Length: 187
Image (cartoon, rainbow, N blue to C red; front, side, top):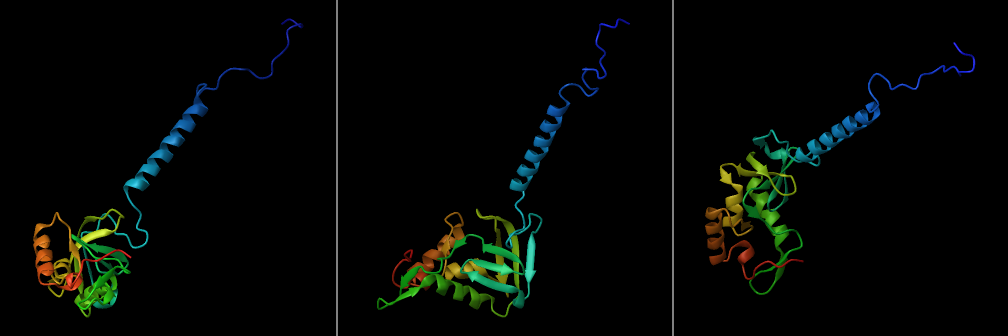
């Protein structure tokens, strides 16, 4: 061995995993994080009473049922929107005969509360609304809650549900609920 040649204590060779090992680890890590993010978006969390994707039927006894508004119930810890209807929100103003204004959103909620009071409620969950809440057909003591709300004039029918549209037309014709004098107006 020649003395003029410097000795190297460490070799400058690539490791056995290859030169791109660090890049591969980063790519795999980013892939896993991306997959987890997509999974979280595709499967909404059970936050704030939103229904899990597995549930199909949900029942609750009267003390476990709360009316949120004219088209929304809470059964135990799950928020449920009545399928095919849309009730006015609180603060929506309607007029009674004689020009007297009233909060028809609150009146709609009271009407739904009257339908469920003292009764067990059973809901057949058939999907989710645009906000992620369970959407269901519910009945209380044999009464279809969505149909009753529309028939009594306290909710509007979704145009895609033809039998409820006919019930809404009857309620309008007879001046029931929201249709006492005028159409509801937003606050």
